[in-house]
Image (tube, rainbow, N blue to C red; front, side, top):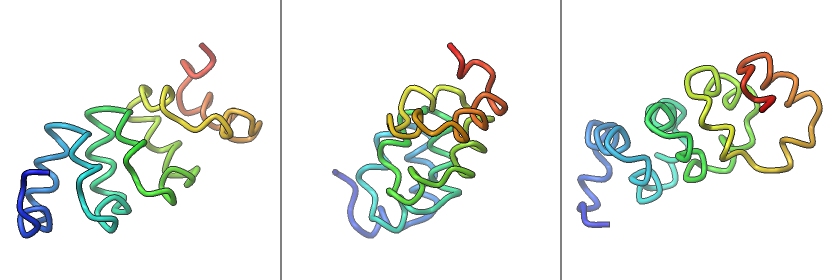
Length: 101
């Protein structure tokens, strides 16, 4: 990472960085990667951002379903174990019918 630690702590810088590239999320401190609002901003630009989110958000089904409603590309980046969970798959299909593809 090239940004100073102080800059990476700045909320406005964080939002701007993740809007430009979801990869920026992986260089931010752990608490930033746990921030629902910040991760949601990153997910709007790329579903791949979920890979850099904190584990608790990657496993938070309600967060994932809400995120799917805004960006279906998240589907390609979800952990395989979620696809084995019937309830999650039904919720995902309801939120994003293209999940059946």
